[in-house]
Length: 446
Image 1 (tube, rainbow, N blue to C red):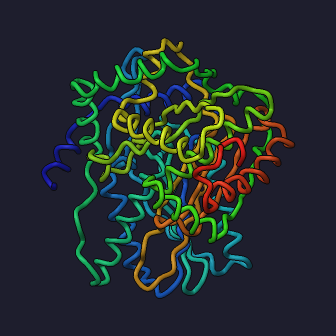
Image 2: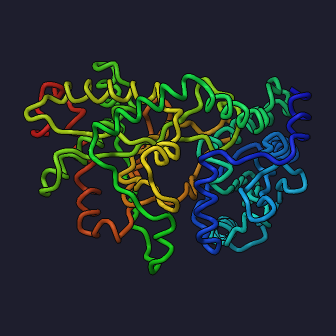
């Protein structure tokens, strides 16, 4: 692994991935905007060993060479390139806020100011790492990066690696394998694009989209041209009884509970579309991890894909049949899920400066917070990048407990009245759908 890392350090300038090029184009169109940011805050409270925690974070940041990436344009205004540059690596900032009248509020203010600051991809470090002490036994680890280098699961990988190193420094476990270098991910992507699997995936998506209604398209950065309006947002805690019923339905159908949440949410949106006199078919957008079986499973990076799922209504179809039908399509899509949405857009002839409208988007994030020795840890997602129109995000533990639903919407796309209706009716629909005996119930009767 050490040799692999040295080879990575000597790689020099490298191309951007398709996903990165999409965010680069957004930046080039609107360099004064700072919307594509991902940021987490870990609230760590307990018997914290500060020197060990500082060392664990520092080593994690050093291993994650994507955090040290910098960009340039080829001479003559050509394509952007990237390289890992240790000079650009973020230095951990340790700040003791215990002298402030309200340390926690002061920490939140600092994080909010950082999130709202403009980020120049050509001149500034792309990540910030802070350790804020807000109490005798309480610390906040603030980790922020631009979406062009990190996705949400990339942040989770950083947190897990740090927890492993922290335990090791306390003598409570092995150091484990370091994070893999970013160049390995680029090599794998290059090999995939020249493979038979790439061609098979292309044929699948061409056939799927040829048989589906046309997907809506928007102009990149169009939201930056309009007057800023505060996004609609709501948080709903789903009761423990719902999580229990959801797992029971998962056992009865053989479908994982995260997929059930996706399909039931899609069924709700489909019924809403029909009830409001719109269409009896609906495209929804699903993030796809695109990491299993890939070196990206061990590399913090931007690897997540996003794919369209067309839902259609069948008159009188029982819920159980709907779930089975959609589950079959999901399985097929995931076999071909490495094929990037940016490549699909190019295949469909989308013009430069445009992309698909990723709305409505349904995201399920079943990630446990990392375990730090003798500490209670809570994760807060402070930023996860921009949304297009209407987003549903479910966060919970890997066993389906502690489920929370976040609803986010652009008021230019969804009126306040409709948003409030979704906030009320979606949780009620989900509760009815997981009730005992609903598999034989017609979807239209839920």
